[in-house]
Image (tube, rainbow over all chains, first blue to last red; front, side, top):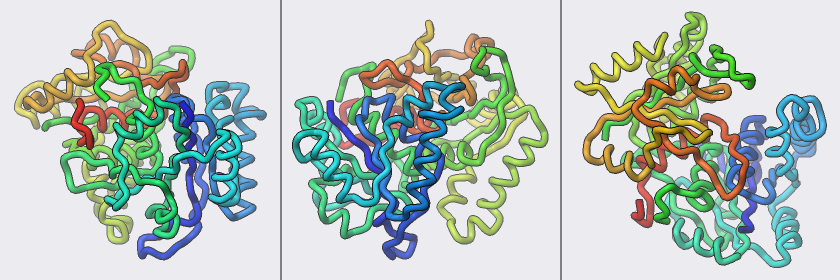
Length: 189
Length: 189
């Protein structure tokens, strides 16, 4: 089981569809690290081109992995130890490829249906058969179209029986890790 | 499909197992409301015995449902409109029973295995057959044993192929709503 997660702060789009760089948030670091650790993800890559934001992310992680936070809550340190902060998606892809010893299958996540969809059961099967996978999650209003155009596939949008589909990226990441890597009491996937 | 969600700030336990009342957080309101709205939950009950905390929660919700927040981001207002703030679990159970016209099946969630477990497929089936369900989520280190002892059943802990199990309550709620109410591309549940 070789699955990495990447949280993209650039390039993503804002509500108007313009490509922007979003801000790193403390909660995205914590919640996705905790979900990644629970479901057995390898590395949680956090991507931002802004040096000060990378420094902020590193300070938050360090508080839990080396500083006071981890001494009172070691589980949180174990989760945040998954984080590696990078300046670009290219850097992450190179790092993941080196780590896995081969280029991973790069899968984007998107709240809107995309052309090159790969279903959850299919991806779950590939992961079980040993394919390394890199999952990309977009902050703000989602991954930019230019980045989406470069990936190997896109997971279907998450949805219930409603037309509403506005999950926090933290929630979407947790659900998708559960769908791909979770142990379900009724082994149906 | 009649499913309500309740976020319990009292009675919950701290890391030492003492029963405490935890603090309302902005992100738990937003993320669980967004997941609830996406998956078709009816009411998102927020329980705290502290009047000032109820006032805070109501102010946050009002900013999005009636104030400036909703005018720039109406989807967020639609999600937060699910929130009803209450002082106690008893009040929520009475409110949900009145709304549903019958007492709902009350299911707790817990990171540890409990005796009276009800599996996801079983609960998913009951929901589809029309049983009203009230899902209880605990903040801090989880629901107190006294509260757990009163429920009709407990959903199995979420887990991947690791021994680690420290999800944020926001993440656990999103995953459980997806397991119980999500539309999966491969209809296997």
